[in-house]
Length: 154
Ligand SMILES: [Fe+2]
Ligand SMILES: [Fe+2]
Image 1: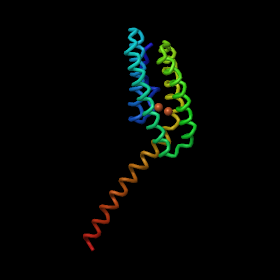
Image 2: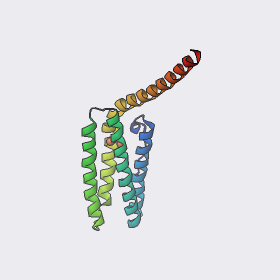
Image 3: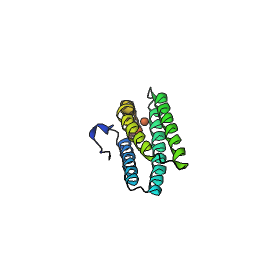
Image 4: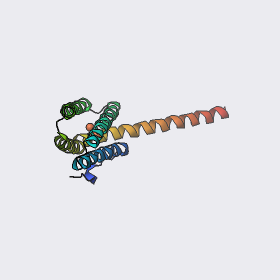
């Protein structure tokens, strides 16, 4: 079944939503390749999907650390456990077992659930931190202008 992007999947952080959309696209590509019974395409999509998901997790974790999100560690742990499960399936797949249906349902169920629940939870902290960084930069810029202005007058 194709996953359709719905509003409740949006976190409100554009860069994160774009990455999640890309992951959903990969999951749909996996389903297409599976239906065509194209084993090589399945392998390729799986490799890309795992790769992309790993870098997405790392990106998310760094945003959370920077924002001092209070569940940063448990969130990282949840990512790690998921990666371990996916890797187990990948090993079986590489040994020639056709576990692509199981991988597909794990990915679609787990990721959608994770986006809606766990990822939605860090949004407030990360957004507040992002806004803080922007206004801090603006303040520094204003300070610079302010000082320059008075230097010229004195
Ligand atoms: Fe995520
Ligand atoms: Fe996450």
